[in-house]
Amino acid sequence: MSVREPRTFAIFGFATTHTALAAEQLLKDLGVPVTPIPAPKSLGGALCGIALRIDPLDAERAELLLERADLSPRARGEIEDV
Amino acid sequence: MSADKRAVPVAYLDHGATSWPKPQPVIDAVVRALTELGGNPGRGAYAMALDASRAIFEARRACAQLLGVADSRDLLFQSGCTAGCNLMLKGTLKPGDRVVVGSMEHNAVARPLAHLARLGIEIAVVKADRTGLIDPDDVERAVRQEPTRAVVCQHASNLTGTIQLVGDLADIAHEHGAIMLVDGAQGVGHLEVDIAALGVDAYAASGHKGMLGPQGVGLLYLAPGLEADVQIEGGTGAGGSESLEMPAERPDRYEAGTANTPGIVGLGAAAGFLAGEGAAQRDLEADLARRLHEGILGIEGFRVLGPPPGVPRVPIVSAVHERVDGDRIAFVLDRTYGIAARAGLHCAPWAHDTVGTFECGAVRFGVGWGTTGAHIELALRALHEIVSS
Ligand SMILES: Cc1ncc(COP(=O)(O)O)c(C=O)c1O
Image 1 (cartoon, rainbow over the protein chains, first blue to last red):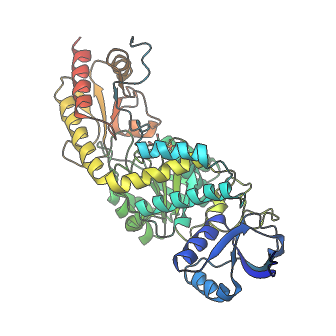
Image 2: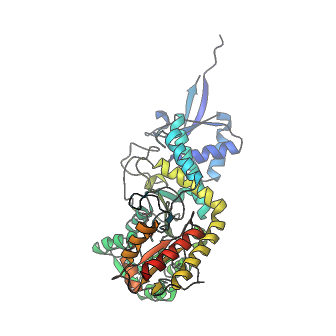
Image 3: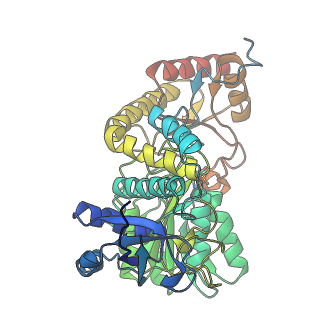
């Protein structure tokens, strides 16, 4: 049995589902892997929509790309996954 | 089957009210929404809710692309053009504002404006000519008279088919510091609409008429920076549910409550369909409407409202007979011939008043997707027989 190390991901929360989906599409189109997840409480506030989970190594570039497209995240955080 | 029992018309000529039949991709999209997109869009991150959110996202993009809207967040899904007109008018006009409005407006505009007038908004009506056209010079004169917050005008008349010069009206409005608000219910689909090129500040559209989508869905474009007071507050799913304020961001700010997913997804498919077939369809329906128009003028005792043949119009042809009432004509068209056409005032008493048919009404034919030359021939033969008997 192999045990995977817990991994930390960056997460982006968005003001609207539309922006989250536009961001997901843009990042995927530009070759940045992202996964939509339920927005975790740790993002602050009660963001009851979706958030995007992303490799922390991609986070900075992703944010820049999103900002340029007027799709900046509203909140940023981290999440542990196993 | 006897005429009494026949529900599906032989010739559907009421596209001014709503389009029928719908293109197969629209039907398929609605069925898909009801069978596969069952989750609540924007309300969950499990696969089926996400698929619903994505389908709405794609539909919004397809509609934005069709209508020349650069950022699809500025295009809001509404329950119809009526809801869009209400938000556009009640959301942007405040007591003390002055509004210049054309006299051909549908009740979707006239009634919200009447409500606003009771709240202290001044309404200046510019009368159209007998063909239903609002002269931009008249609008300019009205706007120059006093400080004006908004010019309001339809894109095309649901009575006369007249196409208004909304791009010119937008220029006039802007020259005088006013915003331009448009009821595009009869425009989209029957006209090629490029909202950016028109330069208007708000444009309400109906999803189920010339756009060929399902009923119960429409669009409102709000220019970036033009904020409207929210008319319906409630849940939006994403971003900041703890707050009792509506989110500032579009589209959620103006889309509280669970979306009409089947309607929106159907509308998105309709937008895709029109992007491919729209130009050919517009040529075809213009030709059919012209044949109908000229044919009716050839029947003794009829006059046709709106511009003369040859002047572009949306494919609506309304006629008045000197002896036979419109409601009688519509009744016999339906009962005897299976032709669906609409008599009465068409929710547009202002427009009927303008063109002098408030007392008698008119019988209106709306041509659209699915109308054929045979339908036009049948209608002309029927009209001839009805008024000759
Ligand atoms: C000019 C005009 N405005 C608004 C409307 C209302 O549109 P909807 O049915 O989408 O609310 C109509 C439809 O009859 C119309 O013809």
